[in-house]
Image (cartoon, rainbow, N blue to C red; front, side, top):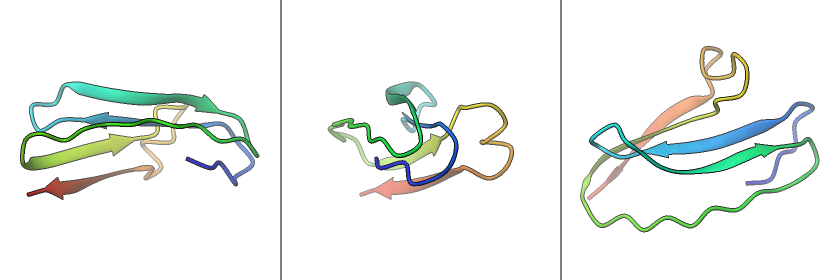
Length: 66
């Protein structure tokens, strides 16, 4: 994850069961972080930026593994 913004950001992924699978800790502006995950089960996975109020401001989403 490359952080091209002016504030710190993080990236956390949750499995279909709602449990956290992995996270890129807060990354300062202009820096990058890395995370490798293996998806072994189909389903809808969620991701969020847990820094400050970022999730409430829309830094969240989901994707489907089939």
